[in-house]
Image (cartoon, rainbow, N blue to C red; front, side, top):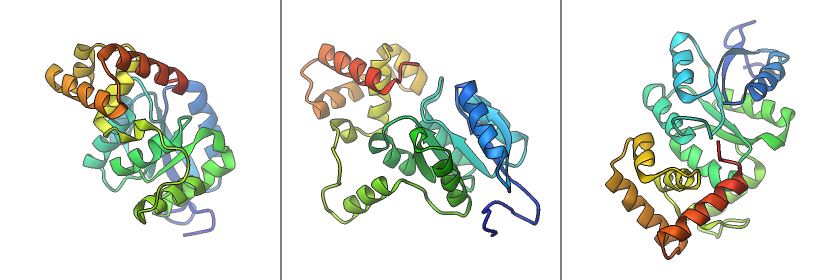
Length: 229
Protein backbone atom coordinates (compact mmCIF):
# COMPACT_ATOMS: atom_id res chain seq x y z
CA UNK A 1 0.00 0.00 0.00
CA UNK A 2 1.21 3.50 -0.81
CA UNK A 3 2.33 6.11 1.71
CA UNK A 4 -1.07 7.73 1.22
CA UNK A 5 -2.46 4.55 2.74
CA UNK A 6 -5.53 4.70 0.61
CA UNK A 7 -5.50 3.07 -2.84
CA UNK A 8 -6.84 -0.42 -3.47
CA UNK A 9 -5.50 -0.11 -7.03
CA UNK A 10 -3.59 2.69 -8.70
CA UNK A 11 -5.63 5.89 -8.63
CA UNK A 12 -8.59 4.32 -6.81
CA UNK A 13 -9.83 6.04 -3.68
CA UNK A 14 -10.87 4.29 -0.47
CA UNK A 15 -14.53 4.94 0.19
CA UNK A 16 -15.63 6.24 3.60
CA UNK A 17 -19.16 6.40 5.01
CA UNK A 18 -19.72 9.09 7.65
CA UNK A 19 -22.33 8.31 10.33
CA UNK A 20 -23.16 11.19 12.69
CA UNK A 21 -26.45 12.80 13.71
CA UNK A 22 -25.09 16.35 13.39
CA UNK A 23 -25.12 17.66 9.78
CA UNK A 24 -22.41 20.23 10.49
CA UNK A 25 -20.12 17.54 11.84
CA UNK A 26 -20.72 15.34 8.80
CA UNK A 27 -20.01 18.30 6.51
CA UNK A 28 -16.78 19.13 8.34
CA UNK A 29 -15.55 15.55 8.25
CA UNK A 30 -16.45 15.23 4.57
CA UNK A 31 -14.56 18.41 3.71
CA UNK A 32 -11.49 17.20 5.60
CA UNK A 33 -11.51 13.75 3.98
CA UNK A 34 -12.17 14.92 0.41
CA UNK A 35 -9.00 17.02 0.48
CA UNK A 36 -6.87 13.94 1.10
CA UNK A 37 -5.24 11.88 -1.66
CA UNK A 38 -6.65 8.39 -1.94
CA UNK A 39 -9.72 9.06 0.21
CA UNK A 40 -13.30 9.94 -0.66
CA UNK A 41 -16.67 10.15 1.10
CA UNK A 42 -19.10 7.70 -0.49
CA UNK A 43 -22.10 8.62 1.68
CA UNK A 44 -23.45 10.12 4.87
CA UNK A 45 -26.04 8.96 7.42
CA UNK A 46 -27.60 10.53 10.50
CA UNK A 47 -28.50 7.32 12.31
CA UNK A 48 -27.71 3.58 12.27
CA UNK A 49 -30.74 2.64 10.15
CA UNK A 50 -29.77 5.13 7.43
CA UNK A 51 -26.17 3.90 7.64
CA UNK A 52 -27.25 0.32 6.94
CA UNK A 53 -29.15 1.54 3.89
CA UNK A 54 -26.08 3.39 2.61
CA UNK A 55 -23.88 0.31 3.14
CA UNK A 56 -26.28 -1.80 1.08
CA UNK A 57 -26.04 0.64 -1.85
CA UNK A 58 -22.46 -0.07 -2.79
CA UNK A 59 -18.83 -0.50 -1.75
CA UNK A 60 -17.73 1.01 1.54
CA UNK A 61 -14.15 0.59 2.75
CA UNK A 62 -14.50 2.25 6.16
CA UNK A 63 -17.33 3.42 8.41
CA UNK A 64 -16.53 6.54 10.39
CA UNK A 65 -19.15 6.65 13.12
CA UNK A 66 -20.18 8.55 16.23
CA UNK A 67 -21.16 6.46 19.27
CA UNK A 68 -24.27 8.34 20.46
CA UNK A 69 -27.06 8.73 17.92
CA UNK A 70 -30.86 8.66 17.87
CA UNK A 71 -32.52 5.28 17.66
CA UNK A 72 -30.23 2.27 17.99
CA UNK A 73 -27.17 2.85 20.16
CA UNK A 74 -23.73 3.12 18.64
CA UNK A 75 -22.59 -0.06 20.37
CA UNK A 76 -25.53 -2.01 18.98
CA UNK A 77 -24.87 -0.55 15.53
CA UNK A 78 -21.28 -1.78 15.66
CA UNK A 79 -22.40 -5.26 16.72
CA UNK A 80 -25.10 -5.37 14.04
CA UNK A 81 -22.67 -4.32 11.34
CA UNK A 82 -20.06 -6.82 12.49
CA UNK A 83 -22.64 -9.59 12.29
CA UNK A 84 -23.39 -8.94 8.62
CA UNK A 85 -20.13 -7.34 7.38
CA UNK A 86 -17.32 -8.50 9.68
CA UNK A 87 -14.71 -7.46 7.11
CA UNK A 88 -15.87 -3.81 7.11
CA UNK A 89 -13.75 -1.73 9.54
CA UNK A 90 -15.39 0.82 11.83
CA UNK A 91 -13.57 3.79 13.34
CA UNK A 92 -15.49 5.56 16.09
CA UNK A 93 -14.96 9.31 16.37
CA UNK A 94 -16.66 10.77 19.42
CA UNK A 95 -16.64 13.67 21.86
CA UNK A 96 -17.01 11.26 24.78
CA UNK A 97 -14.33 10.09 27.19
CA UNK A 98 -12.22 7.31 25.70
CA UNK A 99 -11.70 5.81 29.17
CA UNK A 100 -15.42 5.00 29.26
CA UNK A 101 -16.04 4.09 25.63
CA UNK A 102 -12.89 2.93 23.82
CA UNK A 103 -12.63 -0.60 25.21
CA UNK A 104 -16.38 -1.07 24.79
CA UNK A 105 -16.36 -0.21 21.10
CA UNK A 106 -13.29 -2.39 20.49
CA UNK A 107 -15.00 -5.34 22.20
CA UNK A 108 -18.08 -4.70 20.06
CA UNK A 109 -15.95 -5.03 16.92
CA UNK A 110 -14.80 -1.53 15.98
CA UNK A 111 -11.22 -1.13 14.79
CA UNK A 112 -10.51 2.13 16.54
CA UNK A 113 -11.63 5.00 18.74
CA UNK A 114 -10.58 8.62 18.54
CA UNK A 115 -11.95 11.64 20.36
CA UNK A 116 -13.09 14.59 18.25
CA UNK A 117 -10.87 16.92 20.26
CA UNK A 118 -7.81 15.12 18.86
CA UNK A 119 -8.06 17.23 15.71
CA UNK A 120 -8.00 16.69 11.97
CA UNK A 121 -4.44 15.45 11.51
CA UNK A 122 -4.84 12.81 14.22
CA UNK A 123 -8.16 11.71 12.73
CA UNK A 124 -6.66 11.31 9.27
CA UNK A 125 -3.79 9.29 10.74
CA UNK A 126 -6.32 7.07 12.52
CA UNK A 127 -8.31 6.58 9.30
CA UNK A 128 -5.23 5.53 7.37
CA UNK A 129 -4.07 3.22 10.16
CA UNK A 130 -7.42 1.43 10.30
CA UNK A 131 -7.52 1.17 6.49
CA UNK A 132 -4.22 -0.74 6.61
CA UNK A 133 -5.87 -3.34 8.85
CA UNK A 134 -4.50 -2.09 12.16
CA UNK A 135 -6.32 -0.98 15.31
CA UNK A 136 -6.18 2.66 16.41
CA UNK A 137 -6.41 4.05 19.94
CA UNK A 138 -4.63 7.01 21.49
CA UNK A 139 -1.23 6.42 23.15
CA UNK A 140 -2.91 7.03 26.52
CA UNK A 141 -5.57 4.41 25.83
CA UNK A 142 -3.04 1.96 24.40
CA UNK A 143 -0.98 2.12 27.60
CA UNK A 144 -4.12 1.60 29.67
CA UNK A 145 -5.15 -1.48 27.67
CA UNK A 146 -1.67 -2.96 27.90
CA UNK A 147 -1.67 -2.43 31.67
CA UNK A 148 -5.00 -4.24 31.90
CA UNK A 149 -3.79 -7.17 29.79
CA UNK A 150 -0.61 -7.50 31.84
CA UNK A 151 -2.54 -7.62 35.08
CA UNK A 152 -1.36 -4.24 36.31
CA UNK A 153 -3.77 -1.62 37.58
CA UNK A 154 -4.81 0.50 34.58
CA UNK A 155 -3.34 4.00 34.44
CA UNK A 156 -5.62 6.99 34.88
CA UNK A 157 -8.68 7.49 36.98
CA UNK A 158 -11.24 4.69 36.95
CA UNK A 159 -14.94 5.46 36.96
CA UNK A 160 -17.46 3.15 38.66
CA UNK A 161 -19.29 3.25 35.31
CA UNK A 162 -16.57 0.99 33.91
CA UNK A 163 -17.92 -1.82 36.10
CA UNK A 164 -21.10 -1.97 34.03
CA UNK A 165 -21.56 -4.44 31.19
CA UNK A 166 -22.34 -2.98 27.77
CA UNK A 167 -26.06 -3.68 28.22
CA UNK A 168 -26.13 -2.22 31.73
CA UNK A 169 -24.27 0.80 30.38
CA UNK A 170 -26.93 1.32 27.70
CA UNK A 171 -29.72 1.02 30.25
CA UNK A 172 -27.93 3.46 32.54
CA UNK A 173 -27.62 6.04 29.76
CA UNK A 174 -31.30 5.73 28.85
CA UNK A 175 -32.33 6.11 32.49
CA UNK A 176 -30.30 9.31 32.54
CA UNK A 177 -32.14 10.52 29.45
CA UNK A 178 -35.44 10.19 31.31
CA UNK A 179 -36.62 7.00 29.66
CA UNK A 180 -39.09 4.79 31.50
CA UNK A 181 -38.58 1.05 31.91
CA UNK A 182 -41.13 0.48 29.16
CA UNK A 183 -39.36 2.91 26.80
CA UNK A 184 -35.98 1.32 27.50
CA UNK A 185 -37.38 -2.16 26.90
CA UNK A 186 -38.83 -1.06 23.56
CA UNK A 187 -35.66 0.69 22.37
CA UNK A 188 -33.34 -2.16 23.36
CA UNK A 189 -35.77 -4.92 22.32
CA UNK A 190 -35.90 -6.36 25.82
CA UNK A 191 -38.67 -7.29 28.22
CA UNK A 192 -39.52 -4.87 31.03
CA UNK A 193 -38.54 -7.60 33.49
CA UNK A 194 -35.07 -7.84 31.94
CA UNK A 195 -34.64 -4.07 32.15
CA UNK A 196 -35.58 -4.20 35.83
CA UNK A 197 -32.93 -6.88 36.39
CA UNK A 198 -30.33 -4.66 34.73
CA UNK A 199 -31.43 -1.73 36.89
CA UNK A 200 -30.87 -3.85 39.97
CA UNK A 201 -27.38 -4.83 38.86
CA UNK A 202 -26.54 -1.20 38.11
CA UNK A 203 -27.62 -0.13 41.60
CA UNK A 204 -25.45 -2.84 43.15
CA UNK A 205 -22.36 -2.03 41.09
CA UNK A 206 -22.66 1.73 41.62
CA UNK A 207 -23.61 1.25 45.29
CA UNK A 208 -26.88 3.16 44.98
CA UNK A 209 -29.47 2.43 47.63
CA UNK A 210 -32.70 2.92 45.67
CA UNK A 211 -34.28 3.77 42.31
CA UNK A 212 -34.41 7.50 43.10
CA UNK A 213 -30.66 7.55 43.72
CA UNK A 214 -30.10 5.64 40.48
CA UNK A 215 -32.15 8.11 38.43
CA UNK A 216 -30.42 11.13 39.97
CA UNK A 217 -26.98 9.64 39.41
CA UNK A 218 -27.79 8.67 35.81
CA UNK A 219 -29.23 12.11 34.98
CA UNK A 220 -26.17 13.88 36.39
CA UNK A 221 -23.84 11.59 34.47
CA UNK A 222 -25.70 12.07 31.19
CA UNK A 223 -25.61 15.86 31.68
CA UNK A 224 -21.84 15.83 32.19
CA UNK A 225 -21.40 13.67 29.09
CA UNK A 226 -23.81 15.75 26.99
CA UNK A 227 -25.74 12.60 26.05
CA UNK A 228 -29.19 14.03 26.37
CA UNK A 229 -30.02 13.92 22.65
